[in-house]
Amino acid sequence: MSATFGFMSGFVPWALSILAVVVTGTVLDIFLSEKKLGKAVRGVFASLTVLIIVSPLPALLSGCKSFDLSSFSEEISLDRDYLNYAEAQKRRALEDGLAAALADKGYKNVACEVTAQFGTTICITLVRLDLSALVISAPATNINKTENIRALAAEFLKIDRGKVVINE
Image 1 (cartoon, rainbow, N blue to C red):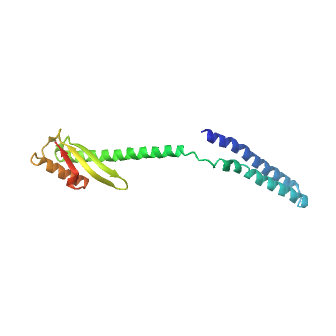
Image 2: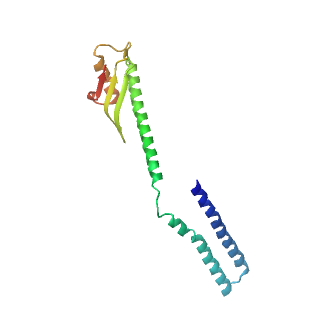
Image 3: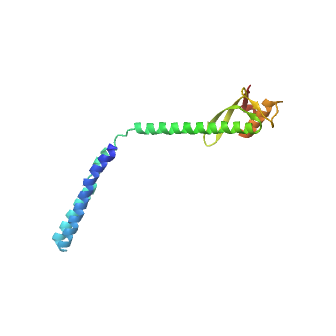
């Protein structure tokens, strides 16, 4: 915030000086004739205007010599924190979706844990299902429940059955 204030405090006098030279040059142009003296005065005011416009450049260029990379690393860490947060939300959505799909098929209270790599695509490497609190309702059967749950999870996540690990 202080950098913006410092810029503005230098900008206002600079802009006012440009405006003053332009207004003064315009007034003198109205009163001066087209003779050599008038042309010389216009040339002086044109040069003065260019010098005033260019005057802040050395200060701006000298400020560009050193870069403070600490703000960039802070922004990068903030971006990394956001990416981690987004990946956690995606993982949680996969886990909640899988638990809801299993509950729809009659297997309730299945704790799901998805291990995946996130990038442009999601690559699921492992799915752990904890059946210790499993409640089986009407559409599901208790016979081959682990194989049925493994098949449902693999189908829902579109992965190989070998990536689904079940703990009872």
